Amino acid sequence: MNNNIDISIIVPLYNEEEVFSLLIERLTNVIDSCKFNCEVILVNDGSSDDTAQLIEGICKKNPRFTGVLLSRNHGHQLAVTAGMAHVRGKKGAMIIDGDLQDPPELVKEFYELLNDGYDVIYAIRKNRKESLLKRIAYKYYYRLQKRISSFNIPIDSGDFSMLSRRVVDAMNAMPEQSRYLRGMRAWVGYKQIGYEYDRDERQEGESKYGWRKLFELAFNGIFNFSDFPVRMIAKVGLVTILLSICYLLYILFRKVFFGDVPEGFTATIAAIILFSGVQLLSLGLIGEYVLRIYNQVRNRPLYVVDKLIQEGIEKADNN
Ligand code: UDP
Ligand code: MG
Image (cartoon, rainbow, N blue to C red):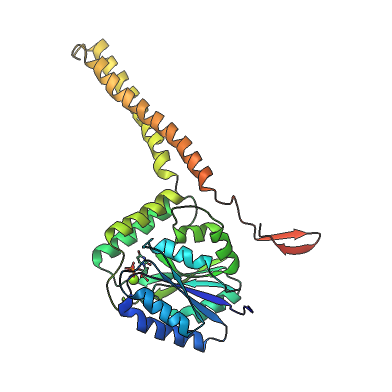
């Protein structure tokens, strides 16, 4: 088949029958008015309503729509991952939410930035329309993550983004099981730029991200991209040992010079505080091995090469 698709727009959908017709209308208008060629990849994430049938319907009617129907609900991140595996766009892909919180019309602006040489254009939410509690949670979570992650993950940006073809390929080549796409996207590197936008309200239906799913996502973001929690154990252990040694010296000093420490107290307290420090430190050391095993089995590529210049010729290096 002759593939002349430039951009694939990936839309994960979980029980979105209420917003579906509006979504298709907006998407159709966008792709019809673009000067470049777009396909839309609709991923049904095991919906229990009529979303799957609606997707089949539109895909049979309009060849610019592709449907990827998952066997059950696998969660948003995996739904997008499934969409990414089917990208045919030669220039790259755009990821948007199905509830129209992310305006699909931005594909044009993003595409221009892609042509300006950016590999990742990630949308930054200027303001949010979620509940106050969620807004506070998001705000501090992203700031915490930025502080403790091993490399720079931009704050206040979700999965709404455009990715160049080579970024899509690089992310598809990362075999990790628990996927935190906005972290993986940052990990790949290349030239990345933020694009500020006002996040709209969900057009129809209710958020499919309850607190449980949000926490799962947050944990993936922290444990997949930060060594901080494990390394913290050993540090706390070391500090405990140092402090307890100081305290013991102080008690010994009082016992010898003032004699006001009760019999048996020194040995008991020594056993408790010193050994809890030693235990924490040992746990931290084991943690360090676990961390290394984790890094090894996650099997990420070690690095991504941007350019290779060989015999005076610039080559793209995609191995
Ligand atoms: N979604 C999905 N699988 C899920 C949960 C959500 O594919 O298990 C989709 C959902 O249909 C929507 C997008 O992911 O298109 C974002 O979800 P939602 O709008 O509920 O999240 P929020 O905007 O509240 O964070
Ligand atoms: Mg939403």
